[in-house]
Amino acid sequence: MRIRLDQRLELLLTAMFISDYDTKGFCVDPEDEYAREALEKFGSFVTHPAVANISRVWDTEIDCSSPPHYALTLTEDIKLDPSFNLDQVRENLVPNADLSRFTADLRGFHRKADFTPHFSQLQSRLAPWLEKLNDLIARRPVQHILEHYLGQKLPATEVLLCTLTRPFLSVTVSGTRGETLYCLCSRKWLEIAEQKDSLERILISAIWHEFSHHEINPLTFGLYDNLNKLNQEQVNWCCALNESIINAITIRLLLQEEVISEKHTDWMVKNAELNKAPQTRAVLDLLLDYEQNRSRYPDISSIHPRLVKAVGPPPR
Image (cartoon, rainbow, N blue to C red):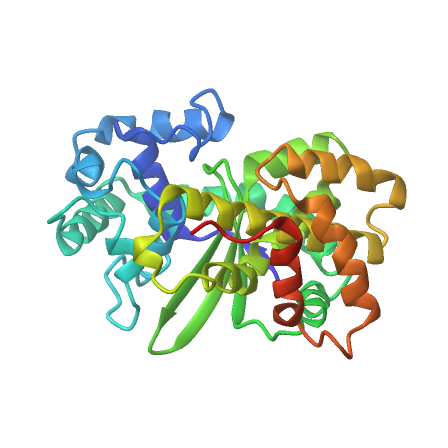
């Protein structure tokens, strides 16, 4: 497992950032160093169709993982790859938006803006830091540790560094060649973590957290028969439980790997509960039983009903 940059992601995020599309909460602030450079280099392309038409393609109530999902299904020469399933991406498009047309425009932006040299400069500039991040990842078998804890084998995985995104994200891309699970890491938040001497904890936590969504989300949303008919209360309940379970798992793994000590647990639980994971402590207590009784609970799905029961029945 190695973290790297991806030109397709950087291209799409740059186009979104310099457009009039509302990226607040998704992209870094305009004052950010990498954001300023993107604006300086590519701001003159604001009228290019790939930039000007973004708000006519992507819905305003967008799932943050949708644009990266789309980017990761593109070929290296910025074309749609028919082997990938784009149903989830299309759910976040404006009605009647032409994704093929937009992809052609994005390919034109890549060529006209001469984006490849810019990406090469990013790679060179970040190479020493990426090597440092990879050294931190290589200290332990990160994926194997999570798989053993979940009792589940993950699909193919990749970890990507994004220079312009604010959140960490989980994206699963599927198609005729199977699934690939991506963890997208925010360059901005990893820089802040490094300044606070917590880079290893945040980096490893992010990988475990984002990869865990692949296993936990289907268990929780699977409590409902028809996902298309969920109301907002039900969606919020599922998301809160998922975040609580995943935060609790991450805390347990950090403790087991001695990345943190017991004295950090209360702070991490309180922080999680203040950030959309209100049942973290309740789940954490049950995970101790899970760890001590793996013959009874061979995988995380076998204890999931107890986790649900502990936080109360899902709203109907």
